[in-house]
Length: 412
Ligand SMILES: C[S@@+](CC[C@H](N)C(=O)[O-])C[C@H]1O[C@@H](n2cnc3c(N)ncnc32)[C@H](O)[C@@H]1O
Figure (cartoon, rainbow, N blue to C red):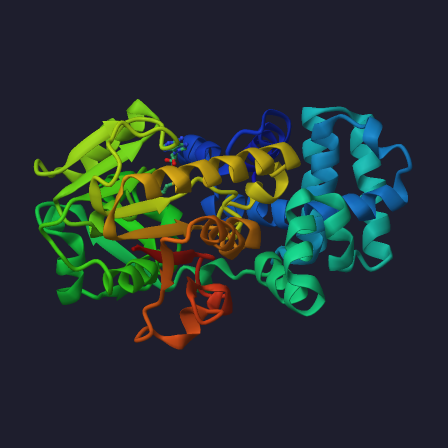
């Protein structure tokens, strides 16, 4: 353990909590300066996975823990979590954190850190009480509401105890250099190669610029969609395209949309394909006439509740207001996507969410109001990914991949 690394961990966690900064952006920003990269990554990840348990335990020893400076609380959380989770012996963790607090903050606080961590150790540290999570975080509250007991516990276990080494095993790389001029879905027929990826964040940046890492869930979703997406010469609209995880799979005859200009420009650079068109506009009010497209892909902005194993901070950030706003946005975007779809055309709706409101309930609500819409299913697809006989969903394989949902609607 190096003091510099502990400093980064505390600084990053503080910014995520106080400024609502994104964990992965901060991580990449500081990445070069970490001494022991594995240790920092591991510590930050378990810190956010276990923070509610740690808070619960610290509360038992310190009545007025809320009055502590956030940095000191974070050191206590980190200590209690590392004692339980890390491979370092407990006395190393204890000594280093106490010494760090003394040098960086004060003797007074270092004594407090020492006393609290020792008591946690003597009392046999903490247990994982999953039932308390829904009271602590909006994310878990929703998860419990949607999945109840059995399934809730199994999903939470997968989030809390994810083994990041195993989890990213099913990766799929898109090689920009090879495939930039080909329609990707076509190319993927010949190159279904899955790489074992030990730790995607350890790849040099130059490498990541040339290749894009795909979670296998995303790849399977596009394979599922491809059953209905066959005609190369028809016109496709992709709404909410950035960062382009799905854009690669679409035939060149596509207009890619996103709301942010920098995202549209970056996507243009990434796809490097002159036959494609790009448009920066609001997906809720598209500048197209009714029934203009044969295919419309809508990968709607969502809570990201299905990608929390890699973006742990979503659990911490999600709140009721954002949730309500997102649901309204999804409703409007779906309606607008439908408006620009031709009769006989297909609408491909997807999310990286495991919340029912954003998935099947969104679709059911839509179909109740649109009698020209029919839900169609790719019945030839692996049944493990067919949900309720109608949808694509990766929840049964959530241990191995992101939580991805998809539905295909035919306009009659
Ligand atoms: C779920 S991400 C899309 C991920 C992408 N399809 C992929 O697979 O890599 C949602 C995207 O929607 C965009 N977005 C948000 N609000 C939008 C709006 N009103 N209209 C169009 N795009 C929007 C965001 O900028 C973000 O890039």
